[in-house]
Amino acid sequence: MNGPGDEASGAAVEGEAAAAALDAPPFADGETGKRGEAEDVIDDPRGDEEQPGPPIRYRIRTYGADMPVDTLMKRMEDEDIYVPDFQRKFIWTLAQASRFIESLLLGLPVPEIFLFKDPDTRRLLVVDGQQRLKTLRQFFAGKFGQRDFALRGVGEDFAGKTIRSLEPSERRELDQFIIHATIFEQDEPTDDRSSVYSVFERLNTGGTPLQAQEIRSSIYEGALNELLHDFAENPHWRNVYGPSSPRRRDEELVLRFLALLHALEEYRSPMKRFLNDFMERNRDPLPDALARYRSVFETTVETVDRMLGAKALRPDRPVNAAVADAVLVGTASRLERGPIESGEEFRSAHQRLIDRLRSDELYQSRTTHENRLRERIRYANEEFGPVP
Image (cartoon, rainbow, N blue to C red; front, side):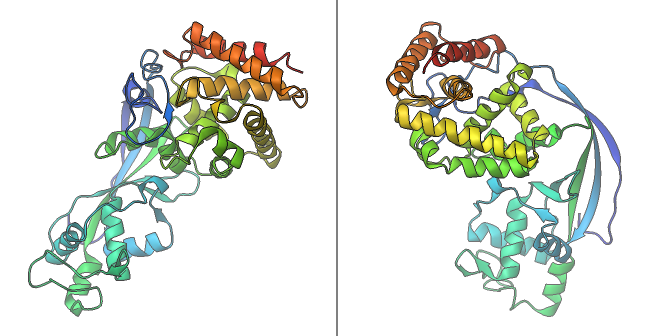
């Protein structure tokens, strides 16, 4: 693991993305809507499981690269190697971080890091290894959070040492230590980068599972992604949805709205793959398209907030993603012919919609099946369409 020079070897690997990687529900952990964090959003946990969609076959090129620590630090400083937003949180204790640095100083092998090369920017996205890389950055900066990074819980030879108090030979050992990286690029399919999404899901299985939108936010960087961040702070959206989601679940609900409004005819379950494809195709829309997205979102949520308030997307206590699909898309479709003048009739139409959805169990189960999703949108258009 710790050896001289750089080496690279190429390999084409064909793999199949199991349906399970696309099946986990975006908003719920079980039938009762119990969530892994205190967040007032649910979705149907069985919706995508019953229609996993055809598996995707990939052709992946992988190669190894041996990088000295000082080179890794320079490339991270230049943002040639970067850590995704959802991995920003540092969870190692000072003792854990110190023992990692001690391993390097002792010349002991450490696990490799795993990087994805973005086909557009050629930057390297850290898929696995962010705790190790962030530990190195903190040690080189001399700070562990708000305090000095002095090694703790290590052998007496290194106890209390900082980057500045290392002996010259120790500093050279650290700078020249080789960390092996596996870098992968997706050759096929050529029109998406879904392999990195699946790799993220498979490698990041410890601790709190990653949410789908956290992954999308990192691998589909671009103008649309920035727009979703902006939309999530819209005050009308905050009134309708509730407090901001630290796991980007509110952004996913906005993405669902835009994708279903503009690409409903293309919808095929699973929902997760549909949203991935929409973000891939629309990463950097033309300015006119971005302006349309902004206009339709702001007009829709302002209307929903003003006329329905916080109960708009809540058939029961929590926000329901399936109801949100119907209410938001139906409202946006009605607004295409002008502002809604009768708040009373709009509220009556909303109640009739909820009653119909509840009666036909269209928001309680199998919510992402194509026919049931389209039925919800049809009901919404029937109820909201005639409202003056």
